[in-house]
Amino acid sequence: MSTFKAPKGTYDLLPPESATYLAVREAFSAPLRDSGYGYVETPGFENVELFARGVGESTDIVTKEMYAFETKGGDRLALRPEGTASVLRAALEASLHKQGNLPVKLWYSGSYYRYERPQKGRYRHFSQVGAEAIGAEDPALDAELIILADQAYRSLGLRNFRILLNSLGDQECRPVYRSALQDFLRGLDLDEDTLRRADINPLRVLDDKRPQVREQLAGAPLLRDYLCDACKRYHEEVRELITAAGVVFEDDPRLVRGLDYYTRTTFEFVHDGLGSQSAVGGGGRYDGLSEMIGGPSLPSVGWALGVDRTVLALEAEGIAPDLPATTSVFAVPLGEEARRVLFAKVTELRKNGVAADFAYGGKGLKAAMKAANRSGARYTLVLGERDLAEGVVQLKDMESGEQTPIGVNEVVAELESRLA
Image 1: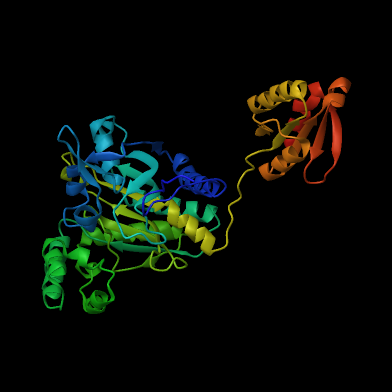
Image 2 (image 1 turned 90 degrees about the horizontal axis):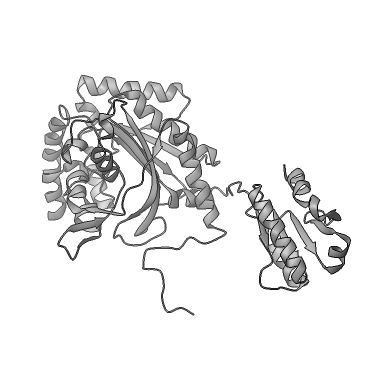
């Protein structure tokens, strides 16, 4: 047995469970690909300052959870704790915003890293699929992304999730609310760290999950009461568009996101079957992030959906995704000449788009048929010396048990016909 194990707070994806993760990623990305979003992939690590500026120096992500290190050349890098800042950096570096077709619509899939206390649904290495629409201020874009995420979750069969929606205002109205919230927080019985956070970014305190803090926040002022007319109109149009699309949501005036760059529209997808780690995805508008990381003004909106927690949500609802068979045909050769003939047929089947596997290792008939059963193949090809002499292959239907001799040269066409 190996003396090495996966690091604490991480996990390995292995068959057959890994097929569910692939199905979730496909469900998340399919509606994006159909809506004009192109795929982007960024490095697994970036300059520390990218996240310090974009995510926010006062956030737990930057102060406590980010894996930061110094290279031999003296560069300060960090494993990416989230995707938006990296994707926006890549778009700016490639000048995608200058190509005359705004918004730039991108989607991505990958692993992210945060040093957290490991628990079910909260890992130090986790997987997300995300989408960003960069360079346009339009309520229809916000609505589009919420609708596409709702569509993705429902395509998996999920029903017991809720969409929470709020507006965080903009540079005009949020400072007024920030001041009112700070005045309120200074009157509470809070520890020094929380009071320090209230001075730097009081909205972060509203995201505090500790019961003793949440009880005191019951009477906190609500941002919706401080929204300027422009933000009110914007938020109302988002609400109208997603309502017209038949998407059900809940207004949550206390909803804030754990990242500093959000403005106006913010939303979260939660599943009530997951306990304390109920958020399965979320996002919002981040109109000032481009300037924060040294770019031009590029109002943008996006989301990230958690693959790990979505798998847990499927388990909570007892949903098994409809997964395609990994193997449709399994070939069992008996003897060296049969091995050469069947291997050639398996290769031909694969070239014709049929998922086929082979009894490797010189297994006997009994062991090879057990392997065929475990593969989940619909059909098994068995070829022995007598069959070779007669120019046929035995084709066995693994569901009915019926076995039929088929001409060696007819095998591929016959299987394509049966599997069509």
